[in-house]
Amino acid sequence: MPVHLMEIRTRTVSADDYTSNLEEPFKEKFLTRKQTYQPNREAISQLRAFAGKYVIIAFSAGWCKDCAVNVPVLALINEAAGLEVRVFGGLKKDPLSQGHKWRIPPSPQEVETFNVDKIPLIILADTDGREIGRIVENPSHQPTLEQEISEIIKSKQ
Image (tube, rainbow, N blue to C red):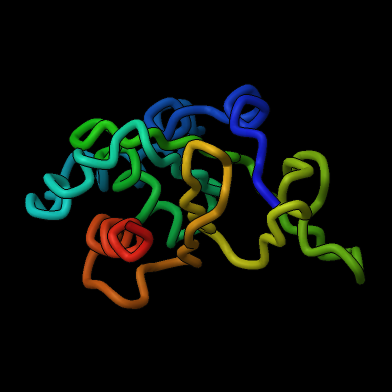
């Protein structure tokens, strides 16, 4: 079932805004990663061709180590390739609940809609809101996040 991208855009922030507005001590880890990471040029070049055709939706939390590695890379992908990236942030586990992994709020209600189990959850959707792929925590088939995103998109062409 397609997602409503307009609604997602109103309930999320850009990857850059998300990273810039984190609280310490998390903000420093995210910003350091963004400043020191060198994206794969070939993958970024390939992703430029898909700007405007796909949207990346990510779920993140400041305390999450894999988020600190991957969400800043999503911000760089947005900057370098023009691919839109939207982030649902502030996820918080709910250790007291038997039936729900995430406490809603502060976690957004979309954690249930998208069946978020582990984060970061990175969802690739076309502009009609149809999910074309997802990456859970880290890339599993390619050495970098931008290469994995490029491969997922190319596999749907």
